[in-house]
Picture 1 (spheres, rainbow, N blue to C red):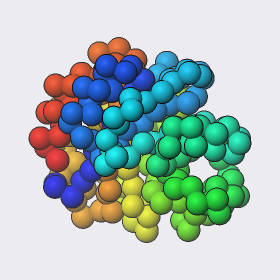
Picture 2 (cartoon, rainbow, N blue to C red):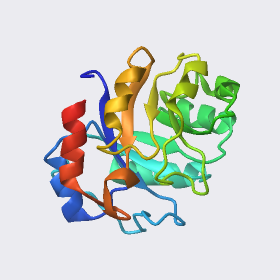
Picture 3 (cartoon, helix red, strand yellow):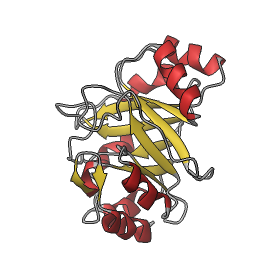
Picture 4 (cartoon, rainbow, N blue to C red):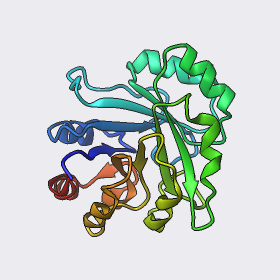
Length: 206
């Protein structure tokens, strides 16, 4: 499983971020959606010594391009993650400005993966998360077997309730175009505060 990368999302506490920096995850995500319990707030800043090899991902829900580009510039974000109902045209506009994108799709047993087709040439990655009440952070997995219906054209992040207790099951997905796992609520002490030991356990499985 060494080829699978790790993204830790929903970070906002400076000390928690610093502790996670020591583990060098491949991606660290910061949520810019005001209704999220993990919202970073308007005056959020990253440590000056944030490691360049850890890619910074800004997570947005139905935000305007202007809002996202402002945050991307201020924090030198490497990727924008679009977690709402953003149309393909909006992704096209961002791509034309040189922005790297992750487009999220909510998944349940009835998912029709043709919804991804308009975005295939416009984003760098897809992210498949559990369909639920919230835009992410629902703390539940979906049936990973449904990913067999996905055409694997665009590499994807897998999200939704991943924890040390179920991460070993990801080995069943090794024949898919799985780029990274995205962990959040499954390793939290409280919203926005991560249990570093649990993340270490997951990292050992990858």
